[in-house]
Length: 116
Length: 112
Image 1 (cartoon, one colour):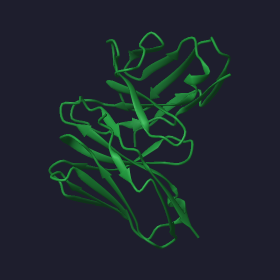
Image 2: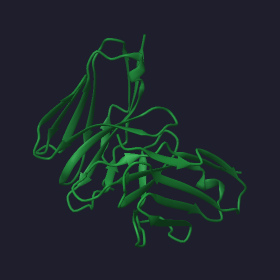
Image 3: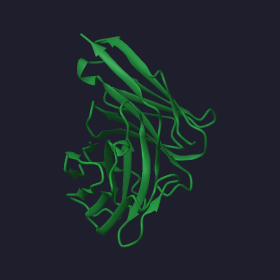
């Protein structure tokens, strides 16, 4: 099956710093990638949809200047949390889709971000 | 919010018993998917059911979909301790551009 990786799996950073999370599709070309965040014992909330070569589409209430998304190639999307604060601590999960009529999204293993 | 509701929020059963989880949603869908998540891990895709399908099977999993009631159920038969996880339904909404809207999840615990 299709494999999506995320790096890093865990990161701890100090308040005010920026953190970059990578999402890669390892064995297929992902025309669309999605970024979610998940708070403890809660569901996944979609943050943004990223299409290769174009600007990401952010969900209502998600600050695009705080959560920078770059989908520079068909196998890589990055999420940068800028000027991170403790309330940004969360589990960030990406998924990738081959697009077209391929409904299935393949999920990465997630990145645990802790901001101190 | 388009987020689906799942019930129960938590379910504890004995190994060998069946587990049933329900999901309700609010608007028209292309398909509905069920995912499993072990604590602190990523999601594993279990099964996808299209809007024109009523029932689907995969191994010990059985999923039903009732579009008139905007609801779905996931049945896990002959449960095992290894089935302990959180289970989420996710809807691909009509006109939603393949975005998934996740339900609130059911935490299943299967005890020996």
